[in-house]
Length: 161
Image (cartoon, rainbow, N blue to C red; front, side, top):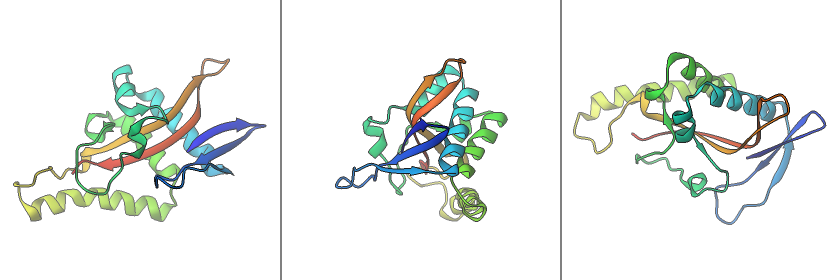
């Protein structure tokens, strides 16, 4: 999703991960504005090293690196965030979901521990609810006030388990 600011409204350009469907669709919504604000707040809470691990340009190959299968992930894992950063990461996650959708997502993340216990220690990838990664894709530019503004943003939270 690429975000642009126009007359106080937020426009998001959504690009499908499907190779054949990379046409931009413009949407203006309150959800897009909330997500951009939450991404900016989350990003600002990170150390410089963490920002480097969590952020990728929208054009990077990382944008297409999404799967539902267990694999190594890039981004910043929950495990490496302090309590405040986790709060902002959860706010970012919830900014684009309904209350029901957010509750389901958090429940699914929590089931990692249950599945790990059922499957045992011999898994190729460990199951851990703190191994979900936050990846931000886009462009962060400083405005005239010195605040960060997202000019394009996609949020992704994936598990390496």
